[in-house]
Length: 300
Image (cartoon, rainbow, N blue to C red):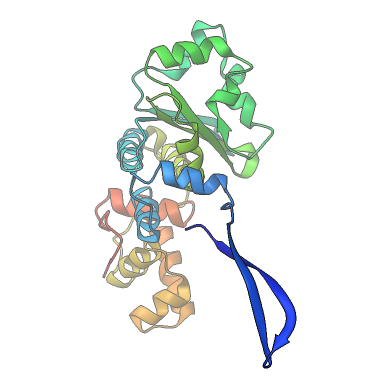
């Protein structure tokens, strides 16, 4: 709504103790423009993402125990956010077996094949090169300046516009996630969703790290040395389920009526029995073996 500013020309002569107003002029102020306001207005056809949605996304990405299930769940989340496809590339280097590479995508064309068409190795991927020295989101229209040919071919095959993010972890681990729209001139919509896609990339990095840990632990049927795969007790399952829903030791203690120290011991024992490297790994194993339900919103 425009702001109306009233300007008065005032005669300082006083009549009976009052001020005489000689004229009245109305000036309409120009409303201040904000780019973010324009972006929001242009994308108002999409439902805004709520905090409950963010929690739902995070909980769903705790479920996958394989790259295939990660691909299916991520594809569903991207569709809910208004994207037509996603491309996930990752490298985890924290395991003694060396580097673990992960690739998942639901795009109609394999991005790796596009790179190979132009003689580019994995290290020459323009998305990877554009993000390895920065943390800010990378619009494909900006990346196209250095490699116009590959992005022109991508547009021909339905990958018209995209935005890419990177999340980094210990030991040089990284996850690069790209979110794609098939319609042209979608850069403003992509920027309007940049906050949620960056957060989603961080959750995808955690999921990739967990899945890579499972691969390492279960490769060739071998478990982590010292693992004792006994059945979990009721208290251990309850504690692990509450931890999967995001509760700390204090929160678990409050729900179960035990001390925080006892809650920590239950979690330690559950992790030991499952042979897990860490708590996310323990949750993933417990879900895959049926000790926990995959729906951890209200575990008890």
